[in-house]
Amino acid sequence: MIEIVLWEVPEPVPPCQHTFKYRLYFGAAGVCRVRYDNERGKGDHRHIDEREEAYRFTTVEQLLADFESDVRNWSPS
Image 1 (cartoon, rainbow, N blue to C red):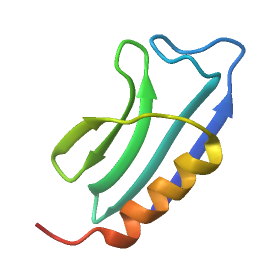
Image 2 (image 1 turned 135 degrees about the vertical axis):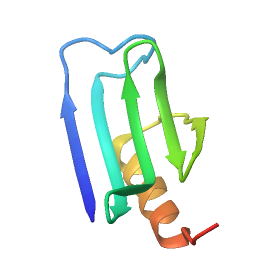
Image 3 (image 1 turned 90 degrees about the vertical axis):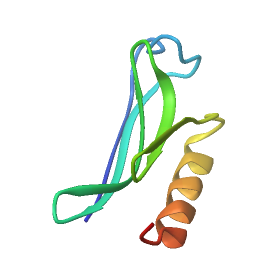
């Protein structure tokens, strides 16, 4: 399953500098495989299986391209 939720907000969600709030999800059988999101206090980051790491947001187009690439390249650990 792939779910993409992206909206523009009036002010950045701290500590982000951009005005987008997003959640991009790829998973199967209720298990998250790849997720990109940003949240107050944490900022932009991504999850690949159990690993979480910072993500450098540049543009919406690049966000979608990076997510698509990670989904295509995902393989079970």
